[in-house]
Image (cartoon, rainbow, N blue to C red):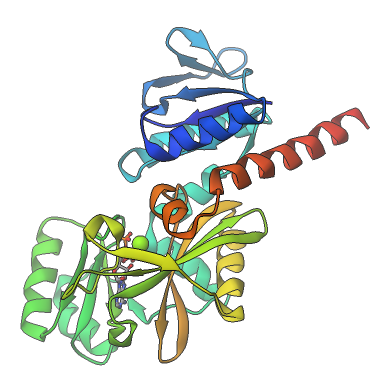
Length: 300
Ligand SMILES: Nc1ncnc2c1ncn2[C@@H]1O[C@H](COP(=O)(O)OP(=O)(O)O)[C@@H](O)[C@H]1O
Ligand SMILES: [Mg+2]
């Protein structure tokens, strides 16, 4: 297979691991910096230009590894490849759905996937009402497009919740409110889904005194045994978002586990180290199976 990895850097751990596993299995692989790709439309066939070369027909499959800040452009590049019949580990639609937590939770709620109680509004005049809809403080105030735990705030009183929300409204930042799941105890569950399977799962625990469990915020991980409910949540989430490969975050609450977000380009470093699962290999194998299916269809 000719595999293109869309990534801003060859030296990023996850990108390196995917290159390594792809080469190990005899595939040809190139890292394409999607932020340096231009798209030309409107005269003849669309082109994707990278370093002076039209690459639109070059790959059999792509693995998008697209960070939050450039996801709109990244998703547009993925879309262009998709429309040209290239198989992708993440659909452009899925990348955009997962990028925004409100959009993700709307879809999850519609499909009856359990989530924390969540409120969003753009009305600075009903701050009290929004907090009351969640039964009062403490509440979580979360940027809709934050990552790595940045943009997740715990407001313990109504007073602090109001001042934070005022500030965000004033900055035109899109955020949402969420009930604070105190009993999760600074822990969450990250499940890695590849194809229709959970291939690895870890429990992350935040530093002492920290309610956010992100590894980037000093959290640590260990292998997690998922309940049937958690496996079901993880598989439903990736199915409904159109993301065959994804990281699904859940927290364990009194009401049972709840989905909090889905990551379209989950980092591999922490989870491979903590679980000892070769996730990069699972991803390459998944591609092999799907591309084989596609070629079989074509020749039939
Ligand atoms: N409603 C909540 N109640 C308690 N803790 C939460 C809640 N939402 C998020 N957290 C904690 O904050 C972390 C980061 O939140 P998350 O929604 O995954 O955003 P990010 O995209 O920044 O990782 C979670 O892993 C979890 O530990
Ligand atoms: Mg998270």
